[in-house]
Length: 83
Image 1 (cartoon, rainbow, N blue to C red):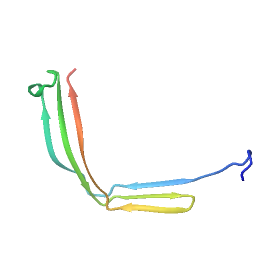
Image 2 (image 1 turned 90 degrees about the vertical axis):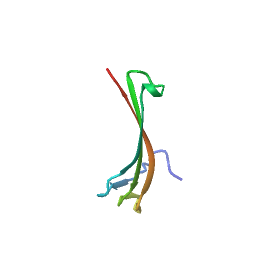
Image 3 (image 1 turned 30 degrees about the vertical axis):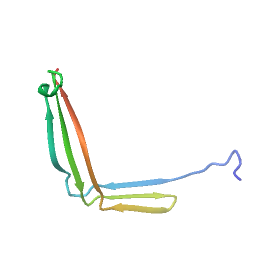
Image 4 (image 1 turned 90 degrees about the horizontal axis):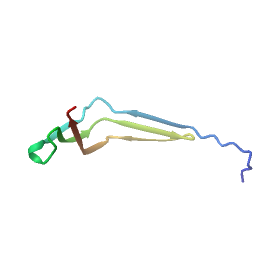
């Protein structure tokens, strides 16, 4: 059991390398005032895919782990407002 004056030190090392393969845009859908948006804004849904050569590594108290061959699919919503 640790006393009240004990100091616990934990070192965490994180390394992220996204590699050389860029994400791909697989679709874009744009919404304007014709689609119910306000007249001073435009909105776009962008579908992205990333299946690259990323390498994510972590080391906690001397125990190491890494993840490779990451695949991610997702949608990003971009809203542009005129000022």
